[in-house]
Length: 141
Image (cartoon, rainbow, N blue to C red; front, side):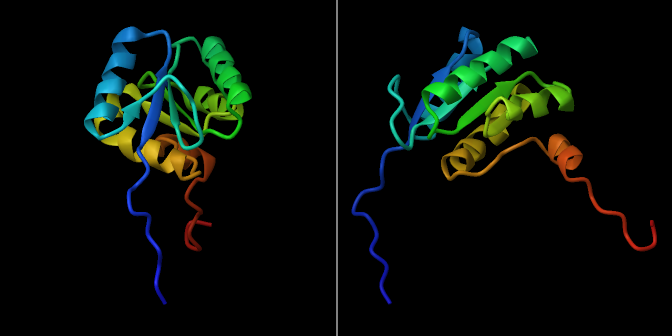
């Protein structure tokens, strides 16, 4: 059995949005350094990275607007370190498909963008433990 591979891999594209110009620039540099083409146009396969507002209400509005405008594209949201789990859950309910803390950008941004592009849900491990806690062992029950 043979598998046909494309002659040239599709270019990785990303759009970085959000009000915080300094953080937006940092995210863009990390993506560009990893080979992403930064674009203002959102086409199929483009990753949307939202450098979100610190205020939860504003963050939820930003996520909802992006999801409404681009329903077939995943939205990865960069949030301040230490954002409470309840606020992170509300960000997911607003339509985000991924969340990365600002203090974990260097290690988590690129794998998170790739996972969101592949249709996966990406959340910080602290939130994952809250969403799906470890089951009790027979002995602990």
